[in-house]
Length: 186
Ligand code: SF4
Image: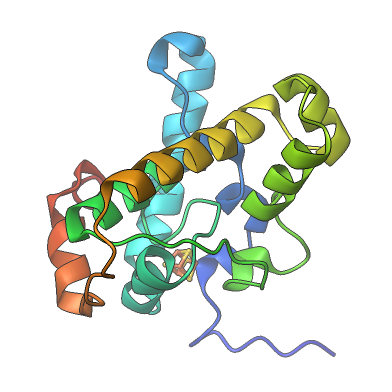
């Protein structure tokens, strides 16, 4: 018998596919979708956003996803680019992609990791993004996103000073989060 603790089980645990949907956590441009698909996407995103906003784990979840782990997925009302923007404002980076489970949305397997994409890129340097996506069983946009992230990290490493910045507090993260458009649409 499965016992579900309603007080601690977050909403994403019940709908992991929603929170791992490529379109949700890395939304395409409005012009890349039909009106009907855009409507479906915004409705889905608004629902996930409302659930995160009401989740008892929201603050801890946001902090960990911004400061401790570079996870994929729609997490704590944020897309991947939202979290990247918060890190940039805070002057922090996460160098090591996580390979461990993060939150309920990772249970049962999740999207391909940054590490897996970079390993495949090294092993097959002449592959197109489409070929890499076929090898890893993910979308081409996922491959492009991880390769773009690697380029941004490389560029930031070249520009950033040697000393690591201080770890931000929860309040620091929430202050920057409050400035995002995402924090106002729940
Ligand atoms: S992603 Fe985080 S904030 Fe959103 S429902 Fe899951 S645990 Fe809660």
